[in-house]
Image (cartoon, rainbow, N blue to C red):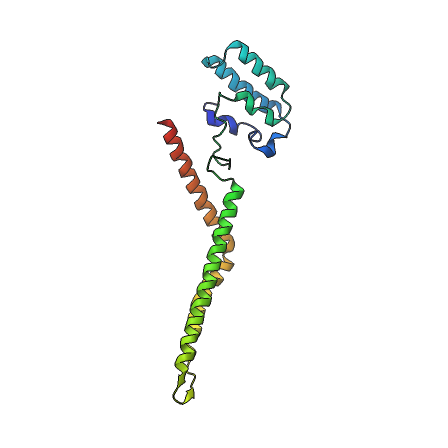
Amino acid sequence: MTGESDVWSSFTRDPRLSEHAVLRASDADREVVHHVLTESYADGRLDREEFDARATDVTSARTLGELPPIVEGLVPLRDLPELGVAGSGLMTDTQLYERAVATWQGDRREALWGFLAASLICWTIWLVGSWGPDGFDPYFPWPLFVMLGTGLNVGRTQFQRDEMIASEHRRLEKKQRKQLEARRKEDDT
């Protein structure tokens, strides 16, 4: 565990998340915290008294939620790379997926409205053009071609649902990674 960001990935489950906070801490989880304390003591960030007090807290910790306060001030608690945490501006994987589904639903809605609007306009033009001085004289129903073209887009949107959602999910993940990298560069400077 060389970097501070490695600390949270070393746990069996991230103890900063409320859904994990109630889970029982393992010996491996306690060892991660003890390692942080040892490094902090060696770096001079903790005196002997505070090291002993925190080490005792680690030993008596029963749940994962009891561990983050022990390392408070030694490693950043807010830096959650793939997790949505209030104030971090980052989304969980579930939130990213929900956003991807919402984008697909918007694309499907746009395709359907495009189909309906183009069809309605073309059929109106066809009907108006079919009325002549001698009454209704229907000619070839060319709006069917417009319906076929716009209908293909509706069908593609509907039948490629999973692929479109997966593609959008990957795009959102990549965007979030870039934002995180930019944030880390700002923090380094």
